[in-house]
Length: 333
Image (cartoon, rainbow, N blue to C red; front, side, top):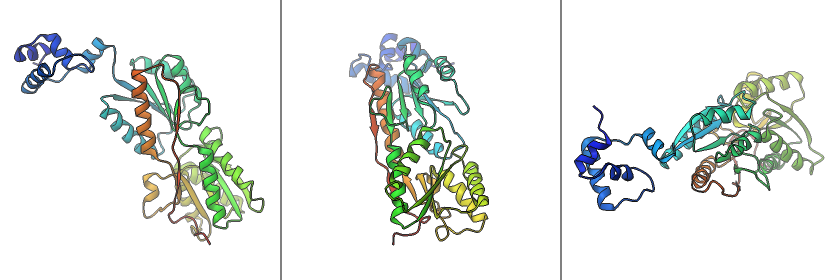
């Protein structure tokens, strides 16, 4: 038979309410009482029932971790960090896949069925309406990897994608490329729009540099490979490409290798994210790195703060990106 709260109370010689308070965050209990209860619980092998606790406190400690584009390997790193950070805070992540989802209200209803205490929207491609829908439903929400705004209506943590695009353009200009291309993800994704905008703004200062652009259907290896294959077949490739994501870059590198092009001798490639695969020796991708761990840490910090103060005024936390030099661009002259 499972050990019950009553068993612990009997062993410790205290009331059942004292045991309950001991295992309830924020409840008032003396240190002496806590030690007696915890000692009895260890001796009996008792673990608090999370479901029963949620019925008592009205808190489930469930945090909806919402995303899409699950075929992008970067999200394995993102989810690994998010789940560990949330668990370190005594919270339980509830993963929700919104790939192909277009109705924000449907997503809200699904998570409300589980009485989540808060939601982290971990995506740069989901429309802002998803985060706002959770906010409007009274659910504390943080948009991680979200779009920068000077007047946010939900908490946003991420990078300035436009500045990252400008950084990529400067890296190509500094290396003397006279024709460059942008190979982005889905054209309607806010991350694609912002990276392309910054890239184009920086290149506008250099009219001597020819430029072109194209977009893949999603942020995936297959999409990056297919789009680069299309560009190769069309001819007149640029000398270097800024791919709006590392996994697109790796797909593009695969297509170039199959077509007999050498990187960086024939064509240069710069990616975005600095995912783990970008560091592999056989890929060795030059990329714009965003501080993923800092973004995730700050997002969890904000959702914890919102659980304590749901009316907390929305803020934007931006972290700087950096150029990560590897082997897919020619060196600066």
